[in-house]
Image (cartoon, rainbow, N blue to C red; front, top):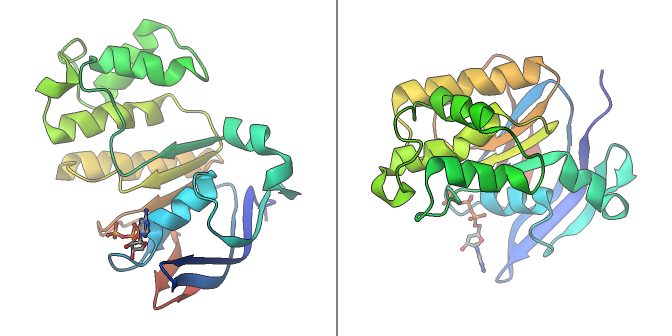
Length: 212
Ligand SMILES: Nc1ncnc2c1ncn2[C@@H]1O[C@H](COP(=O)(O)OP(=O)(O)OP(=O)(O)O)[C@@H](O)[C@H]1O
């Protein structure tokens, strides 16, 4: 079995004096897709933000490749891709401009690679249209194009299926499975009924948590 990329040990998080989860321990290993499940308000987004280093209101231990995450912050940030539950794109910019800006901070890519990624999410012909003139699903697809050119080994994806049609959901499912088959690790929250062979689960709700 591969060494874990990310290990969580006895994570606990409270919000407004309500325990969202406690004694939550799990390992995210290469070659897997893990779904975080639970009803509305059970803490899925909170957990993903904790894993991504975007929320520090928690206790327990997080390790990246066996090291305390706090001691390898830069390495962790370089090797992790987080997509939040909002598309996170600029409405005045076009899909090309958004994707160029998203990639510039980490790995600048030639325009033809960006154009191919946009085509891969069904946005051919919309590359140069301001995003405010696109539908909700098309705007989400701009953010998802990032996945087609991402080489980070760990993906943390929060509700990325929102506003995506059935064919798009199938395409993302296939992409996540391919990513795992290539040795990546994906953690995803969604209310969609994902069907993937060998998918792991972290189940939140009721203050405790289970790993399946
Ligand atoms: N900024 C905040 N300040 C205080 N409490 C918050 C904040 N954000 C979320 N919460 C609370 O934390 C709890 C968990 O929220 P979270 O968004 O993680 O749930 P979720 O499982 O992702 O829900 P959903 O399925 O509706 O997206 C909720 O009870 C919410 O009210």
